[in-house]
Amino acid sequence: MSTEILSQPSAVAPESAVTQRSRGRRSAPVAPNSRGAGSTPAARVRLVLAHVGIYIAALIFVSPLVYAFFSALKPNSEMFSMPPTLIGSEIRWSNFVDVFNYGPFLTYIGNSFLVAILGTAVTIIVSTMAGYAFGRLRWKGRDAVFILFLATMMVPAEVLVIPMFQVMQWFDWVNTYQALVLPFAFGAFGTFLMRQFFRGIPYELEEAARIDGAGPIRTFLQIIIPLAKSSIAVLTVFSFLSFWNSYLWPLIVTVDYDALGTLPVGLASFSGLTGTRWDLQMAAAIISMIPTTVLIIALQKHLVKGIAMAGLGGR
Figure (cartoon, one colour):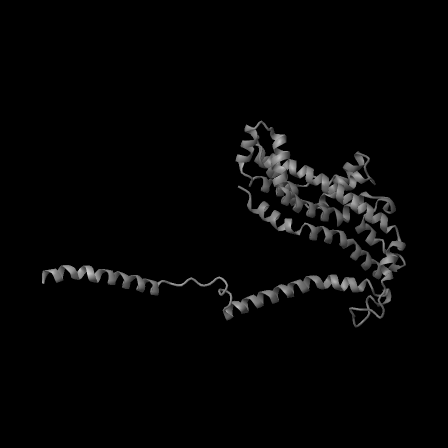
């Protein structure tokens, strides 16, 4: 009897343990499959609605460009016909050729490229150096000077036009390329963008370079700049667009428009005392959008990465 009592727990224990494990397996929640997570009807509806919203937003933003393109192919007499039509009675591809015969349009394109490229290059050089000084170097009054420098972004460019024009007169730079490039190449936006990115770089990289005998200049050129390619790409796009689309300052500081006029100023030349050639103006506007569109497409993958790193990298 005692032998049966002593042997009973040993016989029951393994069975109860197996039973508990099996019950535990049955009661444990099953993780949803990652592939099937979005296969529910509600998830499919949300996905479809999201795509529809994206397509509608894209259509809204693209529709003015489509209308401008087809308007560039219309005869000038049908630009404001009622009721309005997307496609005219005839398609005139010759409007894109007549643009170059109407005035010195090639000169406008060349001047815009020259001003935009030089202005972008100067902006990148100045902004990266200033951003490195504000973001990585430690010197007395750094934060106070940066706040004052950043406060200049609150001043509209229209307010600065008259003082800058007077400065250009003092330097005898009116109606010159340096007047078109230099005044707006020292803005605070590029410095702020590069500073935010530089502050996100680990200081251990600079300390390692300092141990290897590298000075601040060598560290800046060989370590910091290669890491800042994405932010420099963002700054390149913004700076190029700013110089390429600038209208007010080139209109004021330039006297000889046929020699130094840029594309925005050249677009205004299609409006004269005898009327406005809307068909040619639309064709010229489409041509002027090609370089910036190509630049944005070429640097698209760097834009998202650069904006994210510059915006979230500050300490």
